[in-house]
Length: 312
Image (cartoon, one colour):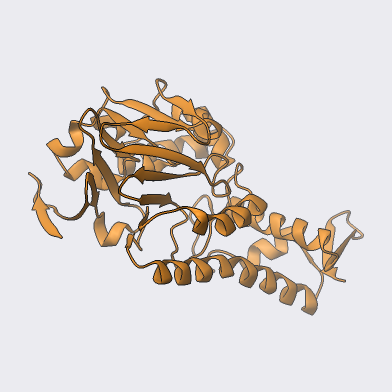
Protein backbone atom coordinates (compact mmCIF):
# COMPACT_ATOMS: atom_id res chain seq x y z
CA UNK A 1 0.00 0.00 0.00
CA UNK A 2 1.29 3.47 -0.92
CA UNK A 3 0.25 7.05 -0.38
CA UNK A 4 -0.34 9.59 -3.13
CA UNK A 5 -0.95 13.30 -2.85
CA UNK A 6 -2.85 15.43 -5.36
CA UNK A 7 -2.65 19.15 -6.01
CA UNK A 8 -4.93 19.77 -3.00
CA UNK A 9 -2.52 17.89 -0.73
CA UNK A 10 -5.05 15.21 0.09
CA UNK A 11 -3.37 11.94 1.01
CA UNK A 12 -5.05 8.92 -0.52
CA UNK A 13 -4.25 5.33 0.32
CA UNK A 14 -4.32 2.94 -2.59
CA UNK A 15 -3.91 -0.79 -2.92
CA UNK A 16 -3.25 -2.84 -6.05
CA UNK A 17 -4.64 -6.20 -7.16
CA UNK A 18 -3.26 -6.82 -10.64
CA UNK A 19 -4.95 -4.35 -12.99
CA UNK A 20 -7.24 -3.17 -10.17
CA UNK A 21 -6.48 -0.22 -7.90
CA UNK A 22 -8.60 0.67 -4.86
CA UNK A 23 -8.35 4.31 -3.72
CA UNK A 24 -9.56 4.69 -0.15
CA UNK A 25 -11.82 7.61 0.64
CA UNK A 26 -11.55 9.81 3.72
CA UNK A 27 -11.92 7.93 7.02
CA UNK A 28 -11.66 4.66 5.16
CA UNK A 29 -14.45 5.63 2.78
CA UNK A 30 -16.96 6.44 5.49
CA UNK A 31 -20.05 8.28 4.19
CA UNK A 32 -20.14 10.93 2.73
CA UNK A 33 -17.01 9.63 1.00
CA UNK A 34 -16.48 6.19 -0.49
CA UNK A 35 -13.85 3.90 -1.99
CA UNK A 36 -12.91 4.28 -5.64
CA UNK A 37 -12.03 1.27 -7.81
CA UNK A 38 -10.14 1.74 -11.09
CA UNK A 39 -9.36 -1.00 -13.62
CA UNK A 40 -6.54 -0.38 -16.09
CA UNK A 41 -7.44 -2.66 -18.98
CA UNK A 42 -5.11 -2.75 -21.95
CA UNK A 43 -7.90 -1.23 -24.06
CA UNK A 44 -10.07 0.70 -21.59
CA UNK A 45 -9.58 2.55 -18.29
CA UNK A 46 -12.67 1.96 -16.16
CA UNK A 47 -14.03 3.21 -12.85
CA UNK A 48 -16.61 1.60 -10.58
CA UNK A 49 -18.80 4.35 -9.07
CA UNK A 50 -17.35 7.81 -8.47
CA UNK A 51 -17.32 8.83 -4.78
CA UNK A 52 -15.96 12.11 -3.40
CA UNK A 53 -12.40 10.78 -3.32
CA UNK A 54 -12.47 10.72 -7.14
CA UNK A 55 -12.10 14.51 -7.03
CA UNK A 56 -8.66 14.17 -5.41
CA UNK A 57 -7.08 11.42 -7.51
CA UNK A 58 -6.16 13.56 -10.49
CA UNK A 59 -5.15 12.32 -13.95
CA UNK A 60 -5.47 8.65 -13.03
CA UNK A 61 -9.19 9.16 -12.55
CA UNK A 62 -9.84 11.95 -15.01
CA UNK A 63 -8.69 9.75 -17.91
CA UNK A 64 -11.45 7.19 -17.23
CA UNK A 65 -13.24 6.14 -20.42
CA UNK A 66 -15.92 3.98 -18.80
CA UNK A 67 -17.88 4.14 -15.53
CA UNK A 68 -19.91 1.17 -14.35
CA UNK A 69 -22.08 2.07 -11.38
CA UNK A 70 -23.26 -0.57 -8.93
CA UNK A 71 -26.24 1.60 -7.95
CA UNK A 72 -27.30 5.25 -7.95
CA UNK A 73 -27.15 7.51 -4.93
CA UNK A 74 -25.63 10.98 -4.59
CA UNK A 75 -22.43 9.78 -2.93
CA UNK A 76 -21.72 7.41 -5.83
CA UNK A 77 -22.08 10.16 -8.46
CA UNK A 78 -19.74 12.71 -6.87
CA UNK A 79 -16.97 12.37 -9.46
CA UNK A 80 -19.04 12.08 -12.63
CA UNK A 81 -18.79 15.82 -13.30
CA UNK A 82 -15.03 15.39 -13.88
CA UNK A 83 -15.39 12.89 -16.71
CA UNK A 84 -18.10 14.07 -19.14
CA UNK A 85 -16.33 12.11 -21.88
CA UNK A 86 -16.74 8.75 -20.15
CA UNK A 87 -19.47 6.29 -21.05
CA UNK A 88 -21.65 5.67 -17.99
CA UNK A 89 -23.54 2.43 -17.37
CA UNK A 90 -26.10 2.06 -14.58
CA UNK A 91 -28.31 -0.85 -13.46
CA UNK A 92 -31.48 -0.66 -15.53
CA UNK A 93 -33.70 -0.41 -12.45
CA UNK A 94 -31.71 2.63 -11.24
CA UNK A 95 -31.30 4.29 -14.64
CA UNK A 96 -33.84 7.08 -14.20
CA UNK A 97 -32.13 8.08 -10.95
CA UNK A 98 -28.90 8.71 -12.85
CA UNK A 99 -30.47 10.45 -15.81
CA UNK A 100 -32.54 13.13 -14.07
CA UNK A 101 -33.24 14.90 -10.81
CA UNK A 102 -36.86 13.76 -10.99
CA UNK A 103 -35.63 10.17 -11.25
CA UNK A 104 -33.38 10.55 -8.22
CA UNK A 105 -36.23 12.08 -6.22
CA UNK A 106 -38.41 9.09 -7.09
CA UNK A 107 -35.66 6.75 -5.87
CA UNK A 108 -35.50 8.59 -2.55
CA UNK A 109 -39.29 8.76 -2.28
CA UNK A 110 -39.34 12.55 -2.05
CA UNK A 111 -42.04 14.77 -3.56
CA UNK A 112 -40.93 17.69 -5.67
CA UNK A 113 -41.21 21.03 -3.87
CA UNK A 114 -39.31 23.45 -1.67
CA UNK A 115 -37.79 20.74 0.52
CA UNK A 116 -36.63 18.85 -2.57
CA UNK A 117 -34.99 21.99 -3.95
CA UNK A 118 -33.17 22.45 -0.65
CA UNK A 119 -31.94 18.87 -0.95
CA UNK A 120 -30.81 19.41 -4.53
CA UNK A 121 -28.79 22.48 -3.55
CA UNK A 122 -27.19 20.49 -0.73
CA UNK A 123 -26.24 17.67 -3.10
CA UNK A 124 -24.85 20.08 -5.69
CA UNK A 125 -22.64 21.77 -3.09
CA UNK A 126 -21.53 18.71 -1.10
CA UNK A 127 -21.46 16.04 -3.84
CA UNK A 128 -21.05 18.05 -7.09
CA UNK A 129 -24.36 16.49 -8.11
CA UNK A 130 -25.22 16.63 -11.80
CA UNK A 131 -27.50 14.16 -13.62
CA UNK A 132 -26.15 12.09 -16.51
CA UNK A 133 -28.90 11.94 -19.16
CA UNK A 134 -26.41 10.07 -21.37
CA UNK A 135 -26.20 7.14 -18.94
CA UNK A 136 -27.24 3.76 -20.34
CA UNK A 137 -28.81 0.84 -18.50
CA UNK A 138 -27.47 -2.67 -18.06
CA UNK A 139 -28.96 -5.94 -16.86
CA UNK A 140 -27.83 -8.80 -14.62
CA UNK A 141 -24.98 -10.76 -16.20
CA UNK A 142 -23.65 -7.91 -18.36
CA UNK A 143 -19.90 -8.14 -19.08
CA UNK A 144 -17.55 -5.32 -20.09
CA UNK A 145 -14.28 -6.41 -21.71
CA UNK A 146 -11.47 -3.98 -20.94
CA UNK A 147 -8.48 -5.85 -22.37
CA UNK A 148 -6.91 -8.33 -19.97
CA UNK A 149 -9.73 -7.78 -17.48
CA UNK A 150 -13.52 -8.01 -17.42
CA UNK A 151 -16.26 -6.50 -15.26
CA UNK A 152 -19.22 -8.81 -14.61
CA UNK A 153 -22.55 -7.58 -13.20
CA UNK A 154 -24.30 -9.66 -10.51
CA UNK A 155 -27.66 -8.17 -9.50
CA UNK A 156 -27.96 -7.86 -5.71
CA UNK A 157 -31.08 -5.74 -5.11
CA UNK A 158 -32.48 -4.49 -1.84
CA UNK A 159 -30.56 -1.32 -1.04
CA UNK A 160 -31.92 -0.01 -4.32
CA UNK A 161 -33.88 -1.87 -6.95
CA UNK A 162 -30.84 -2.04 -9.21
CA UNK A 163 -28.06 -2.54 -6.65
CA UNK A 164 -25.44 -4.76 -8.27
CA UNK A 165 -22.16 -6.36 -7.22
CA UNK A 166 -19.41 -5.95 -9.81
CA UNK A 167 -16.85 -8.74 -10.15
CA UNK A 168 -13.52 -7.94 -11.78
CA UNK A 169 -11.91 -10.93 -13.48
CA UNK A 170 -9.38 -12.52 -13.49
CA UNK A 171 -8.31 -10.69 -10.32
CA UNK A 172 -11.35 -11.95 -8.43
CA UNK A 173 -12.13 -8.53 -6.91
CA UNK A 174 -15.80 -8.16 -5.98
CA UNK A 175 -17.08 -4.62 -5.49
CA UNK A 176 -20.12 -5.14 -3.25
CA UNK A 177 -21.14 -1.50 -2.99
CA UNK A 178 -23.54 -0.58 -0.21
CA UNK A 179 -23.67 -4.06 1.18
CA UNK A 180 -21.01 -2.26 3.15
CA UNK A 181 -20.83 -4.46 6.28
CA UNK A 182 -20.85 -1.44 8.59
CA UNK A 183 -22.16 -1.43 12.14
CA UNK A 184 -25.18 0.60 11.01
CA UNK A 185 -26.48 -2.44 9.15
CA UNK A 186 -28.39 -2.71 5.87
CA UNK A 187 -30.19 0.38 4.60
CA UNK A 188 -33.52 -0.20 2.85
CA UNK A 189 -35.27 3.09 3.52
CA UNK A 190 -35.70 4.46 -0.01
CA UNK A 191 -38.87 4.23 -2.07
CA UNK A 192 -37.19 1.66 -4.34
CA UNK A 193 -35.64 -0.37 -1.50
CA UNK A 194 -36.87 -3.85 -0.70
CA UNK A 195 -36.20 -5.73 2.52
CA UNK A 196 -37.14 -9.14 1.10
CA UNK A 197 -34.74 -8.64 -1.80
CA UNK A 198 -32.01 -7.46 0.58
CA UNK A 199 -32.30 -10.64 2.63
CA UNK A 200 -31.98 -12.74 -0.53
CA UNK A 201 -28.98 -10.76 -1.74
CA UNK A 202 -27.17 -11.17 1.57
CA UNK A 203 -27.77 -14.93 1.42
CA UNK A 204 -26.42 -15.10 -2.16
CA UNK A 205 -23.39 -12.88 -1.72
CA UNK A 206 -21.01 -15.64 -0.49
CA UNK A 207 -21.68 -17.53 -3.74
CA UNK A 208 -19.63 -14.99 -5.72
CA UNK A 209 -16.26 -16.58 -6.46
CA UNK A 210 -13.95 -13.80 -5.30
CA UNK A 211 -10.63 -13.47 -3.51
CA UNK A 212 -11.04 -9.82 -2.57
CA UNK A 213 -14.20 -8.00 -1.46
CA UNK A 214 -14.41 -4.19 -1.54
CA UNK A 215 -17.23 -2.20 0.08
CA UNK A 216 -18.22 1.32 -0.89
CA UNK A 217 -17.87 2.59 2.65
CA UNK A 218 -15.85 2.33 5.81
CA UNK A 219 -14.91 -1.35 5.89
CA UNK A 220 -13.16 -1.20 2.55
CA UNK A 221 -11.02 -4.16 1.55
CA UNK A 222 -11.32 -7.78 2.69
CA UNK A 223 -8.75 -10.33 1.58
CA UNK A 224 -9.58 -12.90 4.25
CA UNK A 225 -12.74 -14.88 3.44
CA UNK A 226 -13.52 -15.95 7.05
CA UNK A 227 -13.33 -12.30 8.15
CA UNK A 228 -15.58 -11.28 5.26
CA UNK A 229 -18.14 -13.98 6.10
CA UNK A 230 -18.05 -13.08 9.82
CA UNK A 231 -18.77 -9.40 9.11
CA UNK A 232 -21.41 -10.28 6.52
CA UNK A 233 -23.23 -12.41 9.09
CA UNK A 234 -23.05 -9.60 11.65
CA UNK A 235 -24.32 -7.10 9.06
CA UNK A 236 -27.25 -9.33 8.09
CA UNK A 237 -28.12 -9.96 11.75
CA UNK A 238 -28.95 -6.27 12.17
CA UNK A 239 -32.17 -6.90 10.22
CA UNK A 240 -33.38 -9.47 12.75
CA UNK A 241 -32.26 -7.26 15.64
CA UNK A 242 -34.42 -4.44 14.29
CA UNK A 243 -37.36 -6.79 13.85
CA UNK A 244 -37.03 -7.96 17.45
CA UNK A 245 -37.06 -4.34 18.63
CA UNK A 246 -40.40 -3.83 16.89
CA UNK A 247 -41.77 -6.98 18.53
CA UNK A 248 -40.54 -5.74 21.91
CA UNK A 249 -42.27 -2.37 21.37
CA UNK A 250 -45.54 -4.07 20.48
CA UNK A 251 -45.29 -6.45 23.42
CA UNK A 252 -45.44 -3.40 25.69
CA UNK A 253 -48.35 -1.66 23.97
CA UNK A 254 -50.15 -1.36 20.62
CA UNK A 255 -48.61 1.30 18.37
CA UNK A 256 -49.33 3.09 15.13
CA UNK A 257 -46.68 3.40 12.43
CA UNK A 258 -46.17 7.08 13.25
CA UNK A 259 -45.60 6.21 16.92
CA UNK A 260 -42.97 3.65 15.92
CA UNK A 261 -41.28 6.21 13.68
CA UNK A 262 -41.03 8.52 16.69
CA UNK A 263 -39.21 5.76 18.58
CA UNK A 264 -36.64 5.42 15.74
CA UNK A 265 -35.59 2.03 14.44
CA UNK A 266 -32.58 3.12 12.35
CA UNK A 267 -31.39 6.47 13.63
CA UNK A 268 -30.86 7.73 17.18
CA UNK A 269 -33.32 10.15 18.72
CA UNK A 270 -32.19 13.69 18.06
CA UNK A 271 -30.74 12.92 14.63
CA UNK A 272 -33.10 14.87 12.40
CA UNK A 273 -31.79 15.01 8.84
CA UNK A 274 -34.53 15.71 6.25
CA UNK A 275 -34.69 12.10 5.02
CA UNK A 276 -34.92 10.44 8.43
CA UNK A 277 -38.68 10.27 8.96
CA UNK A 278 -39.35 8.90 5.49
CA UNK A 279 -36.58 6.32 5.77
CA UNK A 280 -37.82 5.24 9.19
CA UNK A 281 -41.41 4.89 7.97
CA UNK A 282 -40.47 2.89 4.87
CA UNK A 283 -38.11 0.61 6.81
CA UNK A 284 -40.53 -0.06 9.66
CA UNK A 285 -43.39 -0.65 7.22
CA UNK A 286 -41.43 -3.41 5.49
CA UNK A 287 -40.75 -5.12 8.81
CA UNK A 288 -44.42 -4.86 9.72
CA UNK A 289 -45.36 -6.51 6.42
CA UNK A 290 -43.02 -9.41 7.19
CA UNK A 291 -44.32 -9.79 10.73
CA UNK A 292 -47.94 -9.71 9.59
CA UNK A 293 -47.23 -12.37 6.97
CA UNK A 294 -45.60 -14.52 9.67
CA UNK A 295 -48.63 -14.03 11.97
CA UNK A 296 -46.40 -12.61 14.69
CA UNK A 297 -48.37 -9.38 14.89
CA UNK A 298 -51.93 -8.24 14.17
CA UNK A 299 -53.46 -4.92 13.19
CA UNK A 300 -56.79 -3.17 13.54
CA UNK A 301 -58.21 0.31 13.20
CA UNK A 302 -58.58 2.35 16.37
CA UNK A 303 -61.41 4.75 17.18
CA UNK A 304 -59.89 7.50 15.01
CA UNK A 305 -59.41 5.19 12.04
CA UNK A 306 -55.66 4.82 12.44
CA UNK A 307 -54.07 1.39 11.94
CA UNK A 308 -52.72 0.02 15.22
CA UNK A 309 -50.29 -2.89 15.41
CA UNK A 310 -49.98 -5.29 18.35
CA UNK A 311 -48.41 -8.64 19.22
CA UNK A 312 -50.36 -11.70 18.18
